[in-house]
Image (cartoon, rainbow, N blue to C red; front, side, top):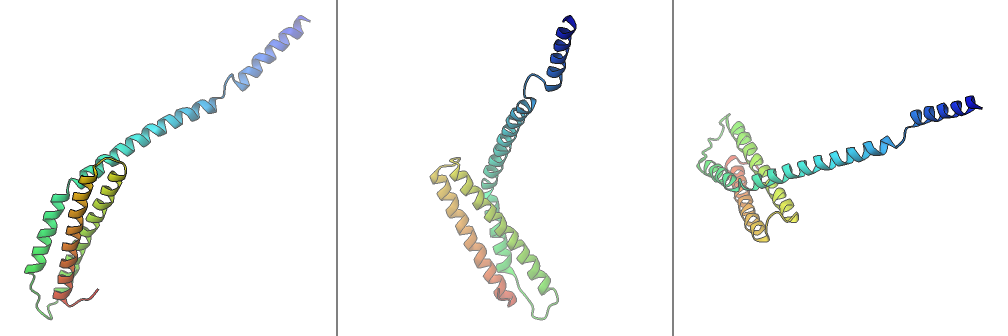
Length: 152
């Protein structure tokens, strides 16, 4: 009888040892979820900071667009010059880069407004400025195409 009780107790200890007392997967999942939430939060904060920094560079890109426009306005092209295509390609690439920067800035502005990180007035002022700069780029692109005789 004593051997049976000792056998049952040993089996119980063995069973508890193999199975465990709790669900370790649930604990691990809760830990992972908490860590993931913290990571997502820090990524979101970093993205927000990056977006705010990006739209604050509006005056910087405005200056670069004005410089590009002035460069196109001063441009003189000689017919038959072998460098024409290279010059056009370089200027067109610069124009595309400026346009892409404006598009990213506009997207960041919209996201910040939708997340209530900027006021409606801030959004309106910066959106109008971006629209003006896009129009300046469009006119510069048309002028560039006219100078080189290309039609897009």
